[in-house]
Image (cartoon, rainbow, N blue to C red):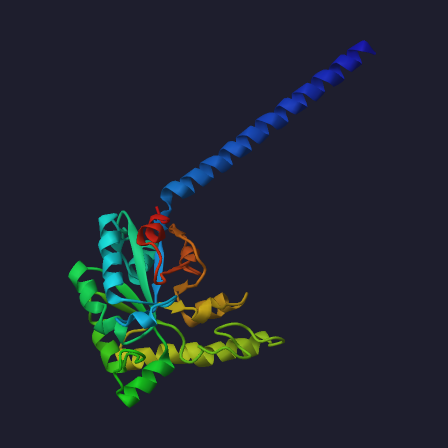
Length: 286
């Protein structure tokens, strides 16, 4: 009876030791995996801009002055950042083409004329790149009207065609006419809408915009920029089917890019408003 108890006790101790060893090994493996991902991932902050005006009365959440933007570029250059565009990012993931040591991305939404008239010369001055995501209906409207008032005008197809040839601006798709807040907000799904009807609605707008850009500019965008940042559980699948290799969201945060293609979707961006401390805004990316 005593021998049996000793055997049972020893068996229990051995079993505990085995579990401890397995647990330690498992935790070490997880640590190694996390460490490898952290070391191999490239940190990518993306800054979101909209409109640029000299009139101080217009400055706010989505409007800053050209001078303030220039000081942003001076500061990020001082911090050692190099601007990249979406093609740089895609080339890194798909083709193993290296990114700069400290990349940052500058994105301009909606395609305001001010983004070219005021900002393109500044980009050239500091040798920086940026992405402009255009809205088709705005482009069509201002191509037809030929209105060039910088307070509200958007880029025409002619100006966009010239931009595509530039080394400083990349054009991406921001929908044709999904900048509405009604039954559907952006790319959001309507209540009770079936998947097939939802997919058709997105294709009718976004795929149409892809073809329109290609027809007018000779370039097919690789990236879709979500209007209002609105999306659904199914929107990414539909956008991938259309052929997009990446998407830009409005979720705040910093991105960590590996060679995983999924890292290119739902990229986070930080909106740059007026009257925020420049150092505080950009230093959080460190």
